[in-house]
Image (cartoon, rainbow, N blue to C red; front, side, top):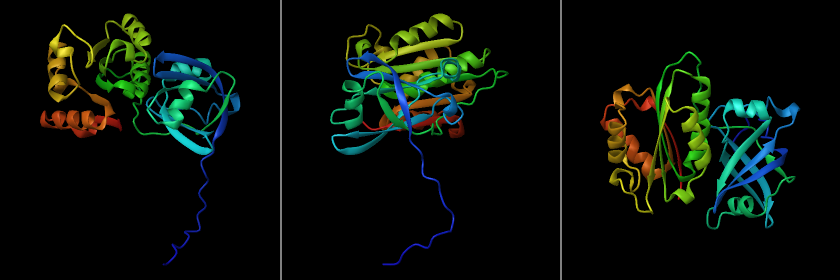
Length: 263
């Protein structure tokens, strides 16, 4: 067996910074939001683009556990507060998600990497875009940062958010999304779809797929050809199906941004 030759270039190891937990907020029976204070000397290192994530590191039951969680604040919120927030939906058997949901409390210190990720939406105050975002379950975590940032920083842009969940009780950030709709009623359309509870409107009952998305957009008056950017986040099957559907509609895949997770 041969050894790979060194290039002679030294790569700096990613550095985990100890951040203090400023708040732990219960979102649903199985999800929490965790807010970190960002010290002044680390503000530049933790500057982020909406849609990026933080990687957390913690010793859990004798193991060195690392998991990534999306940032759930807009750029303006983070700058004003000096904090960053992530959210974790508890996964059966998931060491980090269980720990965050049941063990972490205010004042704890957790190792955190600076923001990473390419599922982003750079904003332009002069832009007048039509954006469609589709999220399912905890897929809302990066999307709420994207949507809020666009609404705050692009006053001429409009957003349609299609959000799928099992039930209203399992919906993360329900109150915040409702407040966003109230604040930006003329620029934000929120369409909620539920798969595990009775819903009077058949279009809003079930799982999100390509056919349902197209029918929702038709009802809300959004033409696929008028959409400038798409943001899809959720289970792999949903995201793949939506990408196929949009491709069949002639949508340029360069305009379709996506992030998937396993269930």
